[in-house]
Each structure stands twice: as structure tokens, then as C-alpha cells.
Image (cartoon, rainbow, N blue to C red):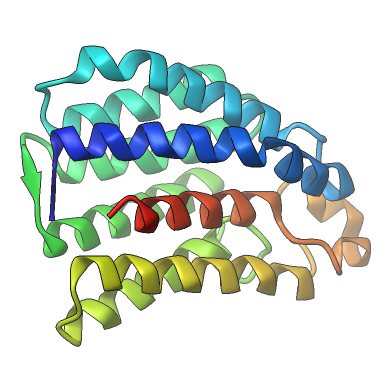
Length: 207
């Protein structure tokens, strides 16, 4: 499905996409958070992109682990530890692999979600990035089980992530800073779910 060189290319594309959407994501965060999600995430992925050339020739697990460490160290708020943990858990799942197949990808994705749940002490339905991640994984699993191509699987995951992010507009936040707003968080898309949808769309478009 992919190799280390392709992963480096995809991560560079993700950096560009987060840069392009930084203002949009920060505007979402201004409504229910700290007004810095897009700015912080863009800073984190710029650091990731700076370090990518040195990762040439490394295995997929090592590249993802370094990506996660960069995000933890440079992204403020809760999104740094959450995204950082997601990438590091995915990296641990792919440790030593120079290539991954669809089964590997699904295992990595599942590990990433497990890391986010553990770090954030959260579940789906609480208006967090998990509301985009969970549907995306399930869509990817269904596509893979139906024998779809890797490209089709990623497109299904991206579509489900976007739908999941949109769904967060209809629920009340019970985790994170937005939880303090109670019912006033209704009608607003969760920034973390939105940023994950951007990332998933970019990954799909990279294949």
C-alpha cells in the first residue's frame, strides 16, 4: 500500500493542507476553545516537515514516531499530546516496517485511536477528534472487507471523517475546554474533528 518514501511525501502534503486550513481551524476553535488550534497544529507540522529529509531511508515506524514527538513538543494545548500520541502509537504498530499493506494500515489506525482514547480519557460522542476518527476507521475497515482498493478505502475513510466532523455540530461537548460551555457548544464543529478530517482528506488525495 505504501512505503517510507511515500509516507514522507504524504506528511509533506499534510503540512501544506494544515497550513492552508490554519485560519479556518483557528476560527472554529475561537468559538469553543482557545482560538489557537489551527495556528498550533500548523506550527507542529512545519516542524515535522523540517525533519522529514533526515528521515529518508528510515522505516515507517520510525518516521511516525518522530512525527508524533515533533507534534508533542511543538503543538500547544491538548491537541499536541493527542495527535502526538496518535502518530506514536501508529508508529509503534508499524515498527521496523519499510512497507505497509492495508491490514497494517488498519492496525495502525486502530492503535492511533486507542492512543487518543487513552490520552484524552475520552470516547466517541463527546465532541472530540474521535468523532471523526472512529467513523473513518469503520469506513476503512468496511471498504477493505469489501475488497476495495487502497485508494477507495482512503476515500471512504476521508468521507466518513468529514461526516463525523460535521456531526460534532449537533452534540454538546463533554470533554476538553469546550465542555465548560455546555449547551453553548451546540452548533459548532469541533476543531480537532475538523483538523483530522483535513488530514484524512489529504492522505486520500495523496494516492
